[in-house]
Image 1 (cartoon, rainbow, N blue to C red):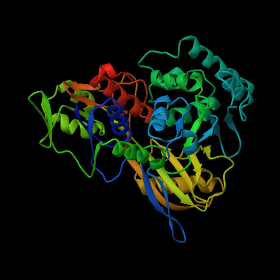
Image 2 (tube, helix red, strand yellow; image 1 turned 135 degrees about the vertical axis):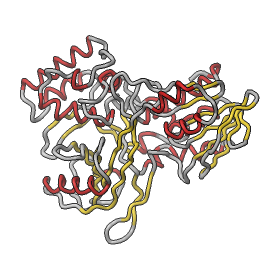
Image 3 (spheres, rainbow, N blue to C red; image 1 turned 90 degrees about the vertical axis):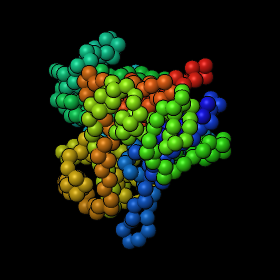
Length: 423
């Protein structure tokens, strides 16, 4: 089968690898001049001259991301070499917060909760009681609940120090807006999933270098070696059905897989006479921004990542502990408000309150970084029309807008094209 894949982000690359392995002749079209989509590397100028390759946003994986990790291995990347593992840790600069030991689940979570600093006995008992109820209910709840509704009665300290950071990190929404059903699914897989490569399911896997090294660059090399047709700088303008096949800018393909962002997929679908219900679902998606402020002159942190409060940034990463230059910190403000300058100034003020006098190097705002994973959200299906499918973190699936969600959707889309190939 001649297959056109539109979009060279993680979903598109994952689909291209899976389709190539299934025996399809793959043409991968990416509008920009770089592989990786919204998880890509970029150069940042350093004080005093020189530059460093960082990322358009600081991403992390977790040990439960089985398909991401398997895909990396398939293209020749050893996850343990490019990812630094850290047991789930949500410590603040003052040392308070939660840190799980590297033990099997659920003993790691139980011990971490009992040993959490800055929480009273009542705080810990509140969390344990809620967690026990969630597990007894199979980590399920009514589809219309928010995370805030799910956590009624939970200690305010636990809400502030654990639930809100996890919710914003996983769903890019505050607890007042985020889907409780999806949040519980992430907790279930992250806290009780199987170990792999010696990592617990809840382990934080932080890239040791830029994101290009983690998967996109190796995937492109692997695809090229397998004979796939890789085209950068190729923004698709038109998509039309023709005699049981598809024309992509006038070029014939047996099937097309749209692995581009939802708004780009909708643009192409709108012009090809596909069913209106898919367009309606895609058009109803709202999107949320994520801002990353890179700053120099920062202190060396005790851990690669710390949780923050009292400001727009929820997390700060020490890039010197991740193979980067000394003194460079990455402040991540999920669901950020305002333009790059506004967010940057607010983050600098937040850092100064901690005694860190840092200088801004570059601020990146991905205005449509994720879809808004709100309660009872109807996401577009993978299948659009015969021979036309979509994949990406926004299509129907179990996860919010994460790299694992994007990869799983790609594998499912290829499986639907080639049912006999399976997963």
